[in-house]
Length: 151
Ligand SMILES: [Mg+2]
Image (cartoon, rainbow, N blue to C red; front, side, top):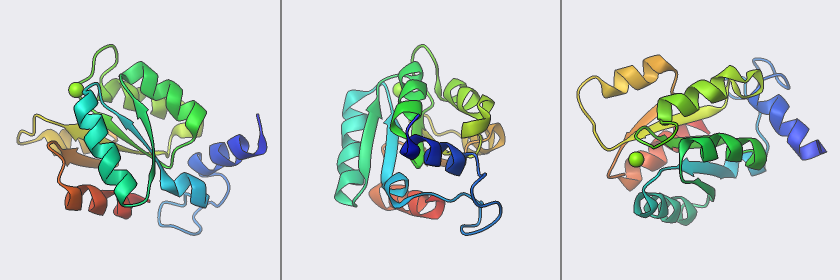
């Protein structure tokens, strides 16, 4: 693994600056802080979120399903992941479980995206371990606020 990859692993695992710096104790490089992975099986939804994020200055990596999302997190070292709950093969909860099962990714910020916002959905997502929750269609201000809270 190269130096950049190692730095990312240490940062998401929270080892490089225990308790120091940002509130979560997670120390991220400027590059990580600017990179967001968007996992959504709906191409139009993914594209819309990409446009919004790029407009406000983030670099975006896309994934079209849950398994793709897990693989791309490992190869692209994002600072935050937005995960659609309803996806084929591996849904958003499955993606979260896989990421959290890896000690190196246990503290990576993962935000749930859902088109079926019903009462209790947010609580269920937070209880499952998501760091945040955004409903679709995505409102630009809400998306921006949630990301800035976490990054
Ligand atoms: Mg979906």
